[in-house]
Structure formats: C-alpha cells, structure tokens
Image 1 (cartoon, rainbow, N blue to C red):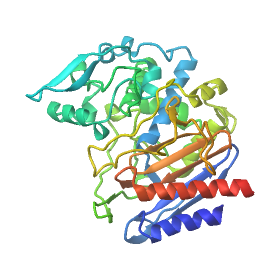
Image 2: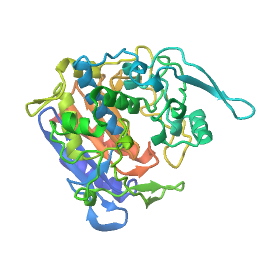
Image 3: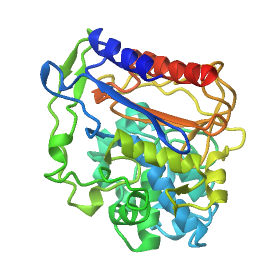
Length: 392
C-alpha cells in the first residue's frame, strides 16, 4: 500500500492534477500510512509538504464540533430532539424563504416545525449555504451581511430554505450547534473543543488559532482557473482572536496525522490511547442514519470560483449521521455500507469505514471544491487502500 499510495500521490502532482497532496490511512490501532507529494506552494520547490504540514480543514471541523456537542447530550444537558429555540431566541421562530417578489423583496413565511439539535447535526434544520443555494445567496447579498453577522440577533439570521425536518440541505446548521454548545457550557467554542476533544486526543497541531509557531507549517492555498490551470492564491489566515469568529461548521486547521487520531477514536467507539472522549453508545448513535427516509441530494453551485456543483458518489444512496454523511450501501471494491465521510472546502476529504476497520483522508488546499481531478485522486487512493487489505 505504501508504494502504491506514494506513486498515486506523486503521479497526481506530476500530471498537474493537484499542486500538492497528502494522505493518511489508519485502522483502529495504528497509523498505517502517511505520505505527501509536492511543494507547499505551486512552483516553489524550496519547501515541500512534510508530515508536520498543517492544512485548513474547513468543514472537516464539523465532526469535531458534533463530538463536543454529543458530550453535552451524554451529560443530559440537552436532548437531540429538544427545541434549540429554548436556548437561543434567534432559533425560536424561524422563517422560510420562498423566493422574491417582482420588486425583489424576499417572500417569507413562518416555518413549520422546530429546530432541534438532531436536525442541526443532520443538516435537516432548514439552513442552507449561499454557496450552493441561489435564494440564500440573493438574500444575503440584499441584506448586505457576511457570515460573521449571522449569529448576533434574529434580524441578521438568514431564513431557512425549507421547513425543519423535511429535507437535507447543506448549510450553517452545525455552526448553530456550536452556538448551542457555547450557551450550555458557558465557554467559547474554541476553548471547549480544545479542552474536551483536541487535547484528550493528542491532536497537538489542530485548532482555531494559528499561532506564530504554527504559521510557518501551513500549506499554501491554490486556485484552479476556468481553463484548468492551478495558481498559487493570495490568502491571509485570520488571526482567530475574536471568539465570535469561531463557528462549529469550519475554521479549524490541523495536520494529517492529527485527523487520523480523530478517525481512530471513532473506529474505537470513543476511546483513544486510554482516553475516553465519548461513550461507545454515543459513537454508535453518531454512526447511524438519523434522518429517516430523507436522503442526501446533489447541490448546484452559485459561486463557480469557489465550488463545482456537488454530487459526490452519484447513484449511491446516502443518509446522514450526527455530522457524517453515511453510505447506505457498499461501494464494490471500496468502502462498505455504514461508512462515514465528509470533506472541507479546499478539497480535503475523509472516510471512516467501521465494517472494514479503516479510515483515510486526503488533503489538498485548492478551490473550487469538488474538483473533478481531485475526486479522481481520492478514488485512486481508496481503491489502493482496499486492494491492499484484500490481498494483505
């Protein structure tokens, strides 16, 4: 597997499919593979990716947030089906955006149903990202808001795209779950996750605040232009000093090896190196489909420079656990039914396969998201991992 994965990563960089790439593979006990290929910045061989390189993981933050919130569920501080509006007034009387009238004024109506923690963690609460929903994009533009404004008061909270509990749509749902955690714990999200998830798991290079010591280890970010060429992109990492800027849906950085430790904890039903982070029953609950007959659907793109349309694993039935996309059927020669997965905006991806006892992740730092060539690389990595396990 090591030779095959090294070749796959190097070939992808040599072909120009990606500027650089890193991969980790773990089972429940050990890190089975860690490798990387390419320079931190395209065209600059002076500094290559290394095992301690760190990456912006964006929405791969979400499972860490969910794990933290589920600790509070274990403690009886909140139930999965409790109305989060009882804790945060903004969530008590949400409205649904049905479009715009001829004058461009938003058409809103009261939502039917409540915003519960389960719905936030499964993206069925009704919130949508403007990057993949045209009405949401237009509402936010007309309101003149930015993401950091959403959580201040009801007037700045975007309306829902659908009634709670009626459909799956990817959105700021887990950001709100992080705000629920802050209300219940009385702590800033970053402080709570650091103390109760990151530190116990020994994830020494993961967090929200990029310190001066960590900044030199950060991989460069890139952009694929419409002609398919990859360019180094200008990106100034946020200082991360305003607690309001910490949200449960994104914003963390971390190393590949650190994320493997989180995946190993899930494979071990909540424990790693003798430290129990979650109860076994809690992790089993997180792994199960939590949205009934609702299924994950494809999403269009409203911002082509930031994301392609998303249709990951087309034709495969997918549900959602408590922060994970869940595969409802086997992928022949690849992951098994019940596998968990998700991704980050700059084309980082992971999957955890409890049946096979394997977890793996791919890290690049490039937009647009759901880049077709990066998805081919992910597929090649997955097939190599399972081919090795079948012959090993």
